[in-house]
Amino acid sequence: MSYGRSKSDLNIEADQVATLASLFAVDVASEDLEGLAAALSDQLPSIAALEAFDLSEFPPILRMDASWND
Image (tube, rainbow, N blue to C red):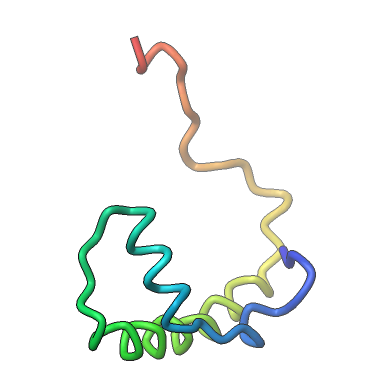
């Protein structure tokens, strides 16, 4: 399932990590942003291998039940 371009072509930048950290209220030291960006970028090619599997014929393992929210 691809959404326009391969995730392996993406490069995560330090300012994107800072934005995500801010959105999730996670404190990240400014000196750690570059390292985290590189680590996230390195993970993207491994996800591309999973996209090669056609799972369209398999039902979800977990079904959400609205009554759980009561």
